[in-house]
Length: 169
Length: 187
Image (cartoon, rainbow over all chains, first blue to last red; front, side):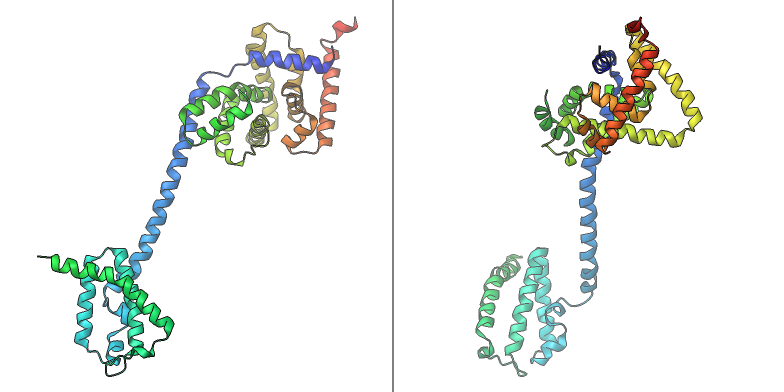
């Protein structure tokens, strides 16, 4: 018999007499469960960590803003509105309105509202002179379109703010 | 169960499906255990390595190329785990102690598993006396029936090296076999 053949046969015979101990199953099973737990545990942990970082990133600037006027987010400061013939009282009025808006709208809606209002106000400030007189002819065609878009987007939000205000007893 | 049938189960198992795990284990454990037991002789060590092979299997399933044979991938993992373990053991135990232990282990294993079955497996005990580098080639060639090129791929060494190790191993076996059991054929 050639050594190749003999080797094959002996290894086969020896293999048949080798049996994986049954209690090894429990051990492999345990490490498998550990693997599954680790795999499942890992992704929610990452998500939580990311959510935590995002929350901190949002909280820090909003904490800074909270101490200042909401209206500052739109006009920069009351000085800007004074330039176009507004007064500090009017500025306070706007501020009051924004505060109701913040209370009535959800966080995302309010963010959108602030952003849209800011854009609209910038356009308004552009066409208003020192005495508070508006001249819409100053707008370019694109700016007019933008104005209209902003107005249509703002309308439902605006309605929501005023509606909930009147609905309040 | 062949490769193709096993794959979806293996994937399910890596996603946490308990019954898929059981199925994969049932289909593969004897093969993994025997491969390791041919290369490592201490019972506790064999069990440690088998456990590690499965851990590696779950963890690196995403690296598996479905165009290649599952069996080849599994044996690759098994051989690498054995090699990792050998490297660690080498650092852990001093050479002279290691040699002493290995002789004990050999008797241990031979007594229990082989002689119990009342079979004369002289060649096998000779294979066990070869160095690891030679015996791994013999096991992959004659137990798993891999071509020398496949063995080179699995062990990540040149084909020429595998060929010379294969040649050397057979030469050693012939020489030693001739000295012990081979006498019967001569006279």
